[in-house]
Amino acid sequence: MDLVASYGSSPSGSAVSEGSAHVEDDGELTSQESKEPSPKRLKVEEARLPDPSALLQPDQAATAPAPAPPTQRIRAFPHVEGQFAVHVTLSAPAPPDVTRALRAALPRLRAALPTLCGLDLGTGHVSLSHTAPAVGSQLESLLRMLTAAAWRLAPFALDLRRLACLANEDASLAFLAIEGQGAGGAFARAVRAVDAVFRRHGLPTFYAEPRPHVSVAWVPGDALERLEAVLKQQSVPLPAWHIEATELVCKIGQRTHALKLGGDR
Image (cartoon, rainbow, N blue to C red; front, side):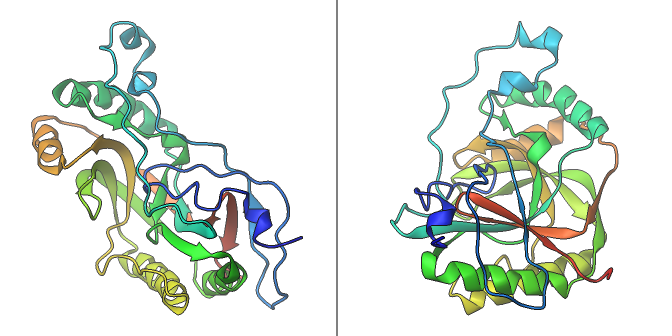
């Protein structure tokens, strides 16, 4: 089967902001044989930015104010025929106690900032790269080299402990996130390993000083200062969120691959 065709008929259709994802698993991927393990394909259900009222408790949803009109989905880069969105992450679905704490806090935060929208906590992730455009001829090499890079990394743990306010590079979105602590060296090594592969393929590398985090809500526009002011006024206690990183997750176009960390072999 043609490799590019296996990534779907709309190559850059999933080139969206890092706070959302839309991936499907259909068709097969063929890659060159190597001594490293082949990436395992995952099926990830569509995860769109939800109606914020869906995050409210059942007894609050009925009296919640009408949500703000949805904003247009923001692409990480313009749609170009023949390009595929590539994003490398650690999977980090929120545990039940963290989900309950955030569901209790979000209505209070949104009362102060009505345009705040919650993300799907069941599909959370820690980014190891930007979402970047790759052309079809790069895909096989890119995936093969990322698989090899993951195999050279050891599994590591990451603890998410505190709420923080972040913004994307062009200030078109602000995010409420839970930041990580510990495993700083291991996380940085994972980012630099992905950077090395991206650089070989002419793709943009990640932040010089990456901050491990999972985004839990977003605000459209240049809203970082407003979000920071709301967070200072609100107390949001969070239980411990412990992540065991045993694989990298690589999304290419409409396909998702799990790349095993090999340090435990």
